[in-house]
Image 1 (tube, rainbow, N blue to C red):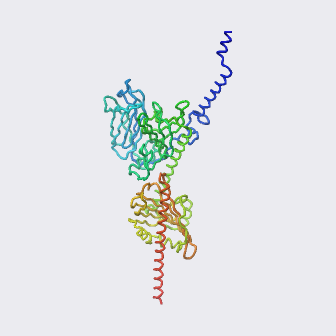
Image 2: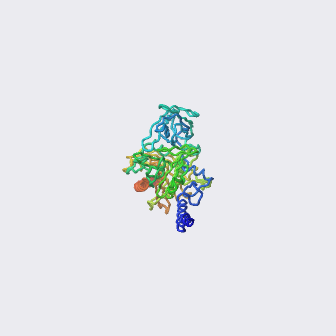
Image 3: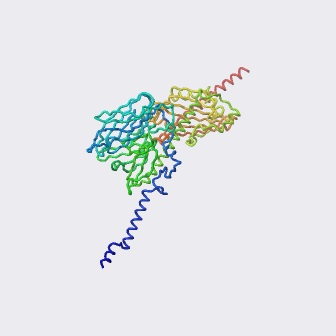
Length: 578
């Protein structure tokens, strides 16, 4: 009897076995769904929703694209270690992290918990315009709730390029030293950051701060009010999540075209993280807990933390870890897609800059090595000629008959000896007109020239006038019956003027002995994305329509006056002969 009772008590019933088995299956499926990426393989790196093999790691390491450094110097600071720091905690230890400032740039090291002699081994790269420059290293003690305590700082002047080797610098406090290895390199102008192997400088932010703010008449968003980012940057996606530190700091993540930002205000402790896409090396799945999947953003070597001390890594790359997403997989896909879009945007900007530089060089007389001529050699090269404008942005704004032939259109209105451009710009009240000469180019078919002037602006967003550069391209067919006249305009003093160009094409096709069919197309080509893109495009097209109306009126009047003078001269010649 006792044995039977013990057997019934110790051995589970069939119903208990069913419940246990169902719970185990549920736990296994939940773990597979939250922790393991689809397709298996553990914690693998994903880009744009696809697993990345070892052969593609070089591509991942260049998510930020090939960005050009305009600064002539790179200062590479290696934060190696510190010793004998002040014990700020009750147990006599500290949780030290460092903030390194060089010029206008600031980087955060990782935090080493419970140590007065921390070892970091982290790199930080800074772009500077000139030497000498001051490097300021400040050591702080991290506190979960209260403001961080300063443990000491050291200022190191860098006067010439070169390498110092590991040197211990004494902090301006009761005790403590920090070990730094500083290396300064002088780079060639417009050298590539990727080719030199350095990350950590936000080229876009530095460049726009250097040239002054862009005025945008719109209500500032969270990226401006919280993170003090540029006015043209908007949050495309927002997520509620938490930053992993000593515990989870809950806040909101904002994703724009250039940055991943996070803001938290827990116990009145403000935390702001600003991660440029240019500095991101990997965006991968991770796990904070079995039921709390997370996303880890690993920064490139030399990038350093931005706004809050990041987590350390054995390989020297720091990282930020975000958890508590409502849908982690959806947020991960969005971040991958944003990183891909940023890389494509940088590549497009690079190609647009190269195209603009090529156009400017070809449109200058110094850049041309020969005068325009139509020959078999030029026709043989036609296959390799580059397009002068972007056809996909054009839309037709005018199509009608014009009272002259295609050949006369070029000779009377566009040729070097024509006074039409001066007359038109004078009536528009434009000033400082400088016109180049038509010449041939190896890169583009036909003839090119460059004109510069100051143009009157009618938009309330613009100043009263702005400096303009217009590159013109003209191709006359061998039979003189067709003319293609293309222009690219760049405004220098208007908001976002460097972001876009106005492309226009005039097609003149002769249909009789004294008239032609004139078709005009115009569009705005954006070299960079901006928040005012749709307004700028519509405003630029409408403004050019008004220009076309005035331009055609002046052109008809100019041709009529020249024709009248020519007929009068012919009549006088006939009378004299009689």
